Length: 149
Image (cartoon, rainbow, N blue to C red; front, side, top):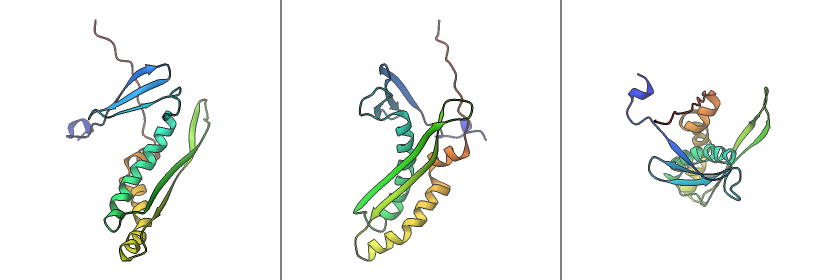
């Protein structure tokens, strides 16, 4: 069965241009995010990719550890080096996600701390769609849609 034949598999974001190098992304639910290469303090596309990698695993880890105890500190950092690519252009290398979580000094906090390494590993190995897609090297197809006459 192809993905097109499966219900609820499509994910989509549409971009609109606000100004040169400034865009508004809108998801299928109507949420928006302003970003771009000339968007001031807003995110660049590369920073959005890093946020997606960190965010995907953060959601997974927060869900698992939060069942045991709420984090007193929950910080996830994604970083990478933007370097020249073979054949031109640039790519990200050495993508690294670091979790900094602290939990209360009680039995529930101990339970959350004990599950944290496994939750991070499971997210990376099985449940985070974003990092798994990047690591799989999924092809990206681009096309130009023709305007109706």
